[in-house]
Length: 68
Image (cartoon, rainbow, N blue to C red; front, side, top):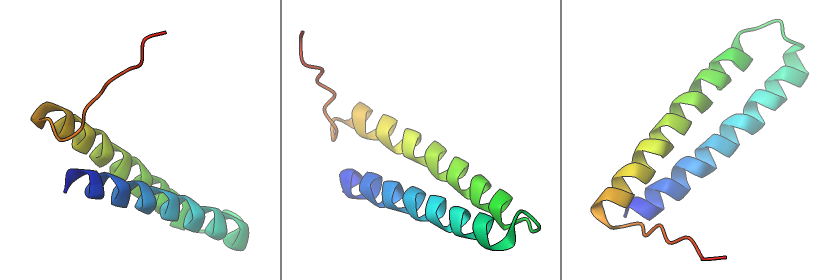
């Protein structure tokens, strides 16, 4: 369940990035939609970090780094 939420938040971050790029090209910086998109992306990124932390602590996400 948490892995699904992590993927969903990643998709939402990419969608927010794409919409901000579209608004930046369309509005040419005259409106605040790009800033609002940045706020949404930062909030979603913070949520993603929290979800990864919770998933790692509960054991739903295994963090195994391969040895070199």
